Amino acid sequence: MRIPLIAGNWKMHKTVRESVDFARGLLEAIGEVNGVEVAVAPPFTALHPVAEVLKGGPIRLAAQNIFWEESGAYTGETSGPMLAEAGCSLVIIGHSERRQYFGETDETVNRRLFAALAAGLHPIVCIGETLEQRQAGQTFEVVTSQLEGGLTNAGADQIGSVVIAYEPVWAIGTGVTATPEQAEEVHHFIGQTLAERYGEGLAQTTRILYGGSVKPDNIRELMACENIDGALVGGASLEIESFAAIAGFNKG
Ligand code: 13P
Image (cartoon, rainbow, N blue to C red; front, top):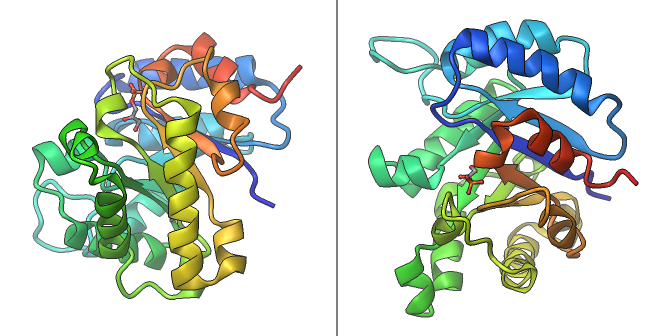
């Protein structure tokens, strides 16, 4: 049984004050959460203030990145223990924007994965093909190599706390959502790949989120797919009304 996870990735949006106000409003708008986990990933500056607002409530806190060393002379970086103490329980790793603009590779994703696990954080590992790769028929190949590279040396016991996010790059911020059929095809493939590597039991419990232009009006059809276990939401997570609607996809 996989409990769906709806996570909002705020990217580089919202100051501390905006984040705190938003978190308060979101708590009110979402109310009770049943049968779904909800998380938000504010920018680093707002993590701790937002954690204070969310404390004791149903919304979990995620960071958008993590560095692999615990401490040291690494100007500009943030470690696992720092994120955990700030109140995070999840961390997004290997987002395509980090791969595109900041030189993230499968190898660095893998290092971040172990740093997250060591700090007791659940990594949300992002994978997904570009439009060119899809058009060249390389989707499964790309997804397999990102999955295998990102999870290198992780044992079955560690995979238990990992969440995978399939985010086709061509669907991010474009308004073009993968159709439920396109997403489900890749999610099913990821599930099979996990089953081959880690066994059927673990694959059955590992959540695979979809990300890319998720909106209130497409969340239900996506969530109706057997292998889609939640969503990583960008743009639509920046407004209380739309994110609350997405997080409440299973209400009435
Ligand atoms: P959009 O929902 O804005 O397409 O962004 C998706 C995303 O990148 C979430 O991590």
